[in-house]
Image (cartoon, rainbow, N blue to C red):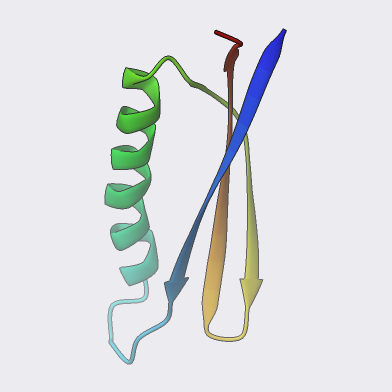
Length: 67
């Protein structure tokens, strides 16, 4: 049997000339979350992203065998 978790991260656009600032910020944070969950036996099962106005929601779906 499996158990599941979802982690959501929100990033807002800033006034900057760097068009990739959300990508740069989110990459570091997402890698940190992946490392945290992996250390506890979780596996990334799926991802999703939703954009809205000036921001983006990143959803990380994790699963592991029930303990």
